[in-house]
Length: 95
Image (cartoon, rainbow, N blue to C red; front, side):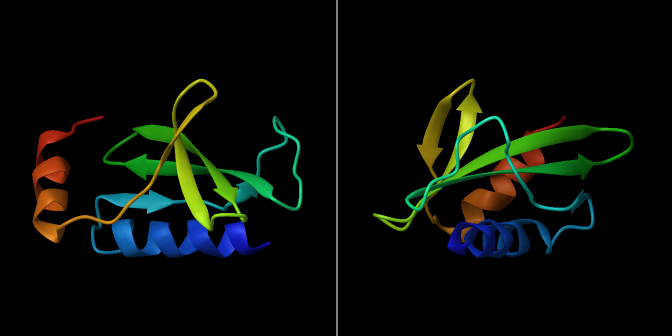
């Protein structure tokens, strides 16, 4: 389950620097069929006081690609970017 490790690595790299966020157990998303090429995961993220969001991830082993669900059944590839952009979004977004 390489996808599990990819999701965990992404969450740690993006959220562990901020005490504002915490996340729970990474679970297999039973709403999707798991195959050798496609793995789906869900994780609950807590931000601030009483603000929770469930994030859904798709890992495609063929291309070693991690995606996040941005809308129902619509996944977009997660890419790396300049670390300064992260601070912009962290400041701008409020749940």
